[in-house]
Length: 131
Image (cartoon, rainbow, N blue to C red; front, side, top):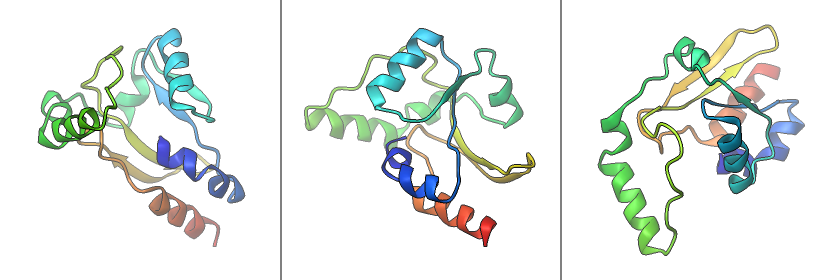
């Protein structure tokens, strides 16, 4: 999310609307959005129908694998303690580009919480769509 926030103006200049989807309770989603400083609209999918439709899995090993544990260890060593777990930490996320006609143009299903495409890659895909 931080990458998307940092590139907000670049997405807007291409006419791109970024939407976030979460499965949590409205209260926790609003708190997360505030903590993250998210400028994007957030939709709730409490029954995870969208997650299922896009093939986003739940994974204990993906969540607590070596890369994620090492990430949290580095954060703690820097004095940045993780936020408390409020929802299902095993639900994997993803990044998807859907065009104005509803056609899926890009799909990235995360294998770990840290597995996200670079914002520049997403911007390049959008630039190619309007070229």
